[in-house]
Image (cartoon, rainbow, N blue to C red; front, top):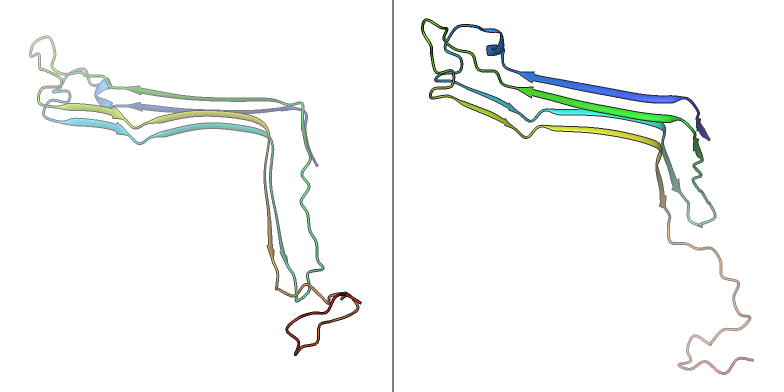
Length: 156
């Protein structure tokens, strides 16, 4: 049994920026490019999380048994935050020699993801069974058809 009664909190922050933001003079990104792509920010909080697994391998008769029980209780406050800041600042030139900060250049901000997940209870339960084909001895019905006969007589 899992019990959660306090607080679960997660916070994640990603900051994407180009260093040109700190330059006050220069050519900026002229004849260059900057790409901010494929970044992932995840904030995840869980009060209770369980992964339960049972593997049952039986012999020649199937007499074994198994089961999985999962009990979770939560009165916890669960909070998750995720934030991504993606900024491109173009500087270039100065008052005496202005320059086009992005002349013949390019900026790409794409394929980034931000996710916040807060959950109280979660469980993954797996029960695997591997068994042979013998189901034990049959109780029988008290009579059998003769092996050589093509028809069984009516029951005695």
